[in-house]
Amino acid sequence: MHMRIDENHWLRGIRKVPSPNADSRPDAADIVLVVLHGISLPPGRFGGACIEELFTNRLDPAAHPSFASLDGVRVSAHLLIDRRGRVTQFVPFDARAWHAGVSNWRGRQRCNDFSIGIELEGTDDRPYTRAQYRRLVPVLRALLGRYPRLGLDCIAGHAEIAPGRKTDPGPAFDWAGLYQRLRA
Image 1: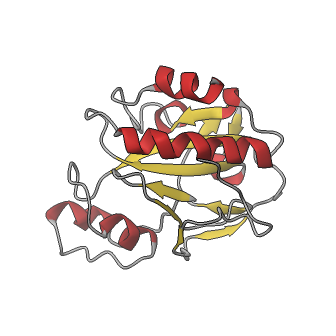
Image 2: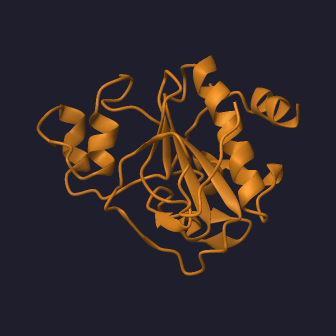
């Protein structure tokens, strides 16, 4: 599968749900990192609209006990890849999505300023699906082709940029398999 990014920095042929939780980057050309995340809402449950609701400020904090801590939280990611491999884009790549929080990569603070955030529906301890990897690889290839400062060494997990604070995408994520597929 070949994916392309249009002139407005959206992936072609995928579902788009614009998030209000984004703003301008300090330098729109300074895209040097892709951050992979894992997310499930409620924790450990897959499917449903909760992640999309979180990224669009429509999540009801009373809908599940675990959502109380998310009341008023404003977060987003550029992309979500669900368990079936379906991709939803929330923020154009040239804008800043609010996914990394307090973070540091190679001595640079505020990774949201210079990164693209991709959420994978999953948990740290349960394997991600084949469908997710099948979709993630062409997405990453499209990003690497479109943004010249990105390379295979510019893909990190949330845990790597926020150690001690975050653990995702977790030990269940197949980094070796991802890099093998990207090099093929």
